[in-house]
Image (cartoon, rainbow, N blue to C red; front, side, top):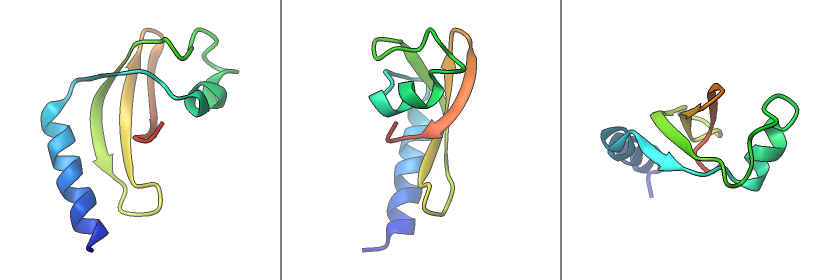
Length: 76
């Protein structure tokens, strides 16, 4: 299986679907808890762009919050 091709294909499909509504994972909330106190598991997020890093980070996304924007792994 060619993971580079698989990631590229998925990135194209996701990019065509933005904006995408989302909610953060527990890990994302923990990562940003010191900087974004209002972020909870129930926070409504919007994925505004996606990009394939081409390395171990995989597919990343830019997420819009009511406080601003962050970049994170698609899995978070």
